[in-house]
Image (tube, rainbow, N blue to C red; front, side, top):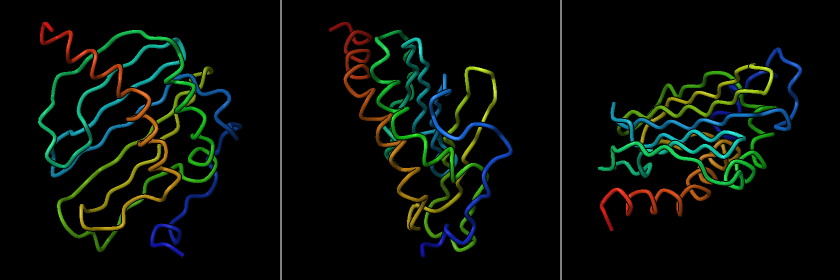
Length: 156
C-alpha cells in the first residue's frame, strides 16, 4: 500500500463515473512556487501549453492554438481512473525536497468540475501512477504541437 492510498478519496458526489463526458482537461504543476507546466486541452482541439514540467523549467511562454482533437482524445483515454478514484485534495505530511503542487482538473460537457490536487516534495514519492499517467500523456500528446509553436514563435 502506497502512502497516498491511505488518503484515497471517496468517489466524488457526482454522476460522472468515467471520462466519456469530459470536455476539458487541465494539468498544472508548480515546483517551489514556480509554475513549470500548464496544459489545457478541450474536445474541440484547442491546446494551451506552457512549460516542460521539469523542476528547472525555463519556458514560460504560453502557446494557445487549435489542432485536431487527437491530443485531447489521447489524454481523455487515461482519465477514468483519476475521475473514479482520485478526486479531492491530498498532501504528504512528510514531504521532502522542494514543495510541489499538482492539479489535474476536468470539466464535463454539462459544466461539472472535478479536481485532483496533490501537494508533495521533489524528493517524495508523489501522486499515484493513475494521476501521473494523465500528466505524462498530456505532455506527450502535446509535445509535437508545443515544439512547433516554439519554432514558429522564434521565426524559424
